[in-house]
Image 1 (cartoon, rainbow, N blue to C red):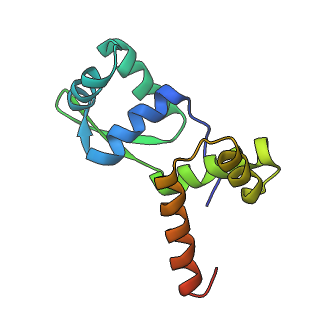
Image 2 (cartoon, rainbow, N blue to C red):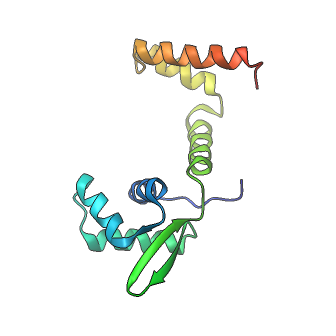
Length: 128
């Protein structure tokens, strides 16, 4: 994974729309974000421009329509942010994070059972 730029929470919301729908036009991005946010179309266009400048998005221009595609994979970005979160708050130790979540009742019983199921499946596959 190469160096990935840092993006803001607002930019990440735009990226989630793009990752789910790419290639996608400016108007389509705006329409989808207007359903879930109170941002103006101008704000959304500004966020798209920032993401292009950061090297996260690319676009092609078809007539007067801009069509966006991502230059980074969602999985790569989420992995980078997860590692950053772990390092920042838990010195890179996932077990410390899990203990914190479990002991502070931030995980429901259903979430704990799902986590146990995932861990059991991982063990059945042989680790790593």
